[in-house]
Image (cartoon, rainbow, N blue to C red; front, side, top):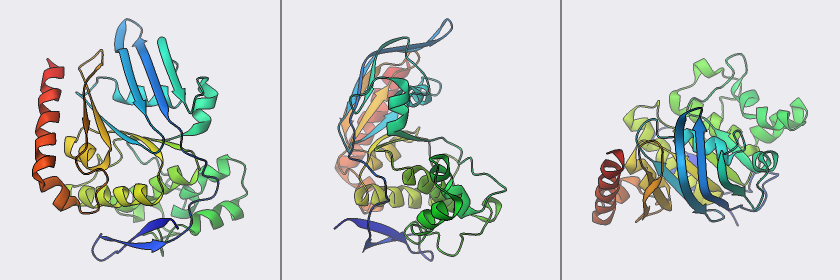
Length: 278
């Protein structure tokens, strides 16, 4: 039986209850990048980049600002085409086939201000051709699981930052794609809310595994949420180091990030970042 996480509103902590996965979820898909190169005109952003992610593996990407991390996500999702090299998702290389397998969550939540929370969450299903009533029913069935029960009719302006991110993540997850591309999903949150959302996302990925590529500037966040972290160099980006996370998707964030093995991995990642920024 699958497990899922329900947020306790009064503490931000999670408890585990049984629940089925969202409908439409297919089996996980791996990602393969080989000799990837991309430029914007004369500006080279990615050069000879190689990376693999196994099915249901979470890969964190960290690197200097402007090195091409977001561009890499867009290439994986089929929103851009590489100048050279191979991008494959679940064995598919064509842009439309990659896009069909990927759900992209940008840095900003991009919730529509005139839509309610439930209509924002259901938008991915509406885009797939589902009627409004059916889409609302499917999204509403997950609102308690995502700690959003009682806020179905709220407009985005009436939600906290953490709740907006949960609506955005529900919208991403409910699309049923086997690959999630997350671009700085918690960058706009305060430190306490960000830590709570990291723990919440770790639990969500344990209960509903997907292949995930997570872009973040926060090394600690990358190590906590990922199975493996790839450190990118300054532009044009190459991978200068890959680290296995000591406690991938651990349940207790406070215990995980203070563990000596985690602290050592964080220092190693920071050293690699400094090397790659030169």
